[in-house]
Amino acid sequence: MYNMPFVHTSQCWLIIPSSSAVRHTIKIQRHFTSPTSSSSSKKEAVSAVSGAGGFRMEHLQQWAAHHWSDNGANTNGRRRRHEIIKEEDLPYADLYSHTVTTECANWLQYSCLDSSNELAKAFFGSKYFLPERLLLTSICKCVNNKNRLLSSSYSPSMTLETTMKTAEIVTILPNPLGLNDSFLFWKVVEKSKLELTLTWEIENVLKGCTMLSCDPKNRKVYVGSCMDQFKHSSSFFFDKKGSIFQNVVVPLHQRYSFYLLRGMVQELETKAPSIQ
Picture 1 (cartoon, rainbow, N blue to C red):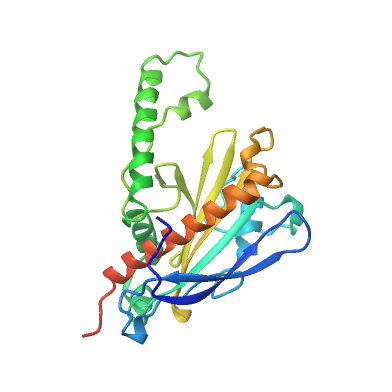
Picture 2: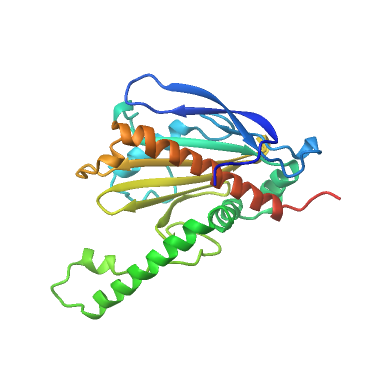
């Protein structure tokens, strides 16, 4: 799914966090198909950036580290003030941006009452995300069936934690998607008009967050991600200092994030009214 037709070239910057204090910046060539290559106003520009537009990768990285260190305490949609966490204690993070048309940017800024909700619908509703959505939906339905059996065998000896784990997993995207709403394995923990942050976790192994945001003034939309291993997990696949994580997991994740970003942009451009 990553072999895209070579139509024209854009430069893409990847900033890859490392275990050392020095960040390694790699300049690569990214090839992609423009939907209307004959029109200069609708040429796509894509980049993986730190500090472009209205969001920084470092901010997301620090937020995720503090969110998990606070055990996911409720912040009522606001970021807390914390001391800066050291580089070696930060989770893996990346942030990709993609330029949208002026019509799409204006639609997100002026016409949408809840732009972040439109970002979520475009991200989770795109055909690029469809295979993952179908797979996760099947898994969630199996989990729900198992949880129903556990609930039917409820006894007073069951703990509150066990009871909470039997809650039904939502397999249909809520509309609108609000704070504390869930979809599949994601839960909304931060929400504003132009930004949405969701967390997810694989029990006792891996945890992460997905950030969707837009900066209409700069005509950019963003997809950011963080991943970190649970402290007591012994999985060598997700050890951020290990060679498998750095050489296999990270490159695949970066390609997939870029792929999903393109799908989200296509959905947004389809919904945005065009100027005749």
